[in-house]
Length: 154
Image (tube, rainbow, N blue to C red; front, side):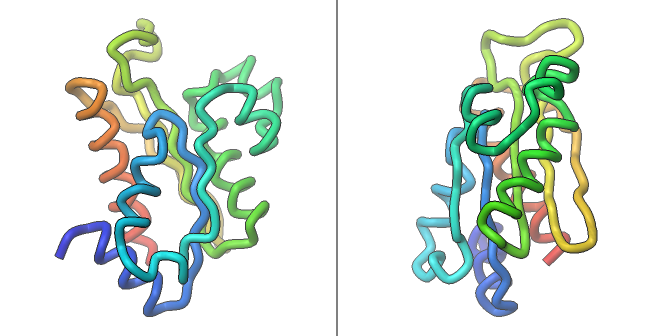
């Protein structure tokens, strides 16, 4: 069974809900999940917060966090996950922020650097990942890793 279908099946069976805040993946996780019939039973909202402005205005990431740590950081991803979960009152909040490339990378934050955060009742955790490949390959790897993380906690 495909990972996205397995995640959907578990969410439906356990009656758990999910909200998403995607940046570098541009809604790819949402696309994967909404391709599955019945996904409205668990997927309450998805926000593509691609710009810093969206992260600040919609997801309430403090400007000082973005200025200090950057949009691509553990701190930003963690707040995105917590706030999307709280905003839509879901069991899980999943957030992804990263640099898909081929431009935008720096020495300290290279192309492929991605943070994936999962917020739930008993806390929030964040993975730091370094993916390689083309822009599309990085987006696909990030989406898959986000689903793997979610599945581990279902």
